[in-house]
Amino acid sequence: MDHRWPAMSFHAFGALIVCVLFSPTVWVQQPEGCDGTPVEYSVSIQVGEGDTKESLRQRAKEQAEREIIERYCGSVITSTTQVADSQVVADSILQASRGVITDLEALDGGHYESREDKDQPGRSVDFYNLTVRATAARMAGTDDPNFKLQAVMNKAEYSDGETGQLTVTLGEPAYLYIFNVGSDSSISILFPNRIFKDNYVAPGVFHYPSPEQQGQGVNLRFAAAEGQVSQHLREYMEILATKIPLDLSQSKIREAINRPLSIRDTAPNTELAKLLLKLHRDQVTATTVAYEIYRPPQPTP
Image (cartoon, rainbow, N blue to C red; front, side):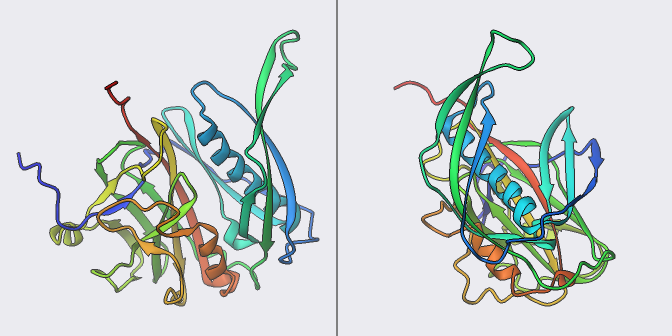
């Protein structure tokens, strides 16, 4: 068996075998805000077994983004929960349809707090608290309910260095964009790229990488960026379909070619939100697929 790696490899940081799909719709009556004014917001999440401060910090930021959008932008929230092996592994709220976070920064390093368990008096539960400053803005226009896409990956978890494939289903022709959001909130673009620039895709099923792309040495390889210490890294594929092409010429988002990119090498994920604000809501549809990268414990020197 040939174990040589191909000359070109587009890195990402897992995948999903979807067993159950729920799509609840909730109306949030909070129309004020969402006008570009920075707000400070605090979140608290329960500490689970195996959680590191790094993973808790990332989860807290994700929760803050969702809650800020819901509180300050309002509108209809479409939430997709994907379940694999009876575990919820992705909770995708399509923020682009009603509001996006254009900037978010942690104001502190986060701190732990013990509280009494409401269900079991006398037992304490640990929580991680984080305060952020964020800016939210709303896209103009109204949604196109007929403009939809779905995405799924071929596995729920990848070993560091393993390859995989993303499957996207489009309901109508569109410009397709595939981004990867790393565990450090960095964002990189996988498709289109310097080899395959034409991203106008016909309706139906689209595989990335396709057999043609794999034949030219393009692989979707999952790898941890420099500086990540957790054994389990939670990351995302952010998939967009647009009716008009995005202008990426001035974007700071870089292609993840040959190696995974950290946030110091590319842009924060809020850079994508800035691009989306230039579109109307009926010109874009989006979905998110979460996955994990597993790195086995390193041997002690």
